Length: 301
Image (cartoon, rainbow, N blue to C red; front, side, top):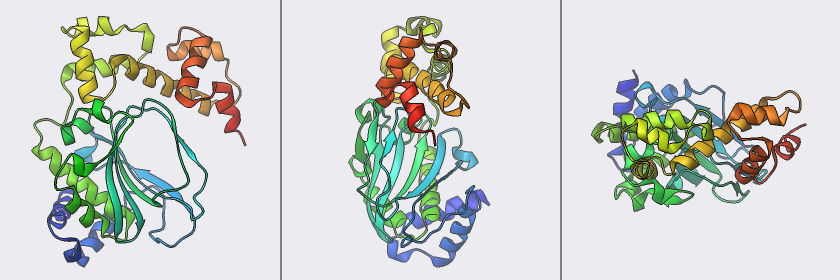
């Protein structure tokens, strides 16, 4: 079922948006909706907002972390902090049904920024696992770091893809069509995986951060530290040290947000691989503009 649906989606992507087959779209939307964990409205006139995400189809699961859809409230809602996570996102932005605005490839963020309350109201996104957007688009991810680049700058057929995907009035349908596009892109790529050495380095750097030195990892993999850094910057979009810092921060952030009471900060710092509590506070503030305690207080009811 998955393969037939994805193949139907790819056929649709090869047509003009005004020739989309209603029967295929109906079946496609039904298939996509079944995967979403929550019931969300497809209405483009509803005043409320929502965010929902689901896992990618099995053929993309090792490359894509999540497929997501979102709608801003009619009043814009609250500003949202986007924090460093080493992921890249392919994002379709729309103002109203049948009128897509742009299709962007967002590079991995390494610094925090606030997503304002203005801008396109409807979003459909694909979040790549670290190091995997490169295999789909073949552009050095270091060039996209903290950047939002129109896909048309990287791929000449992006305008046709934008029109075809954006013609649907279902956010779930648009998400699944983007999924179909990526399945096809990966079929044509030489490899959908980072090299074995790079994958091993990412695993090592996702552990206890500074307790593992980049030079030691490079030596264990039979390469120089400089060569490992270059491979990281091209494929992942960050240096190995920045990647390790982000992974360490995300672990600390998860622990802070899940804690039922105020954590013992020195212990948390040690568990996450920081030298000490001061190191935790410094890095956390660097990633969020707030101390861990300030972040926790801001999110308490």
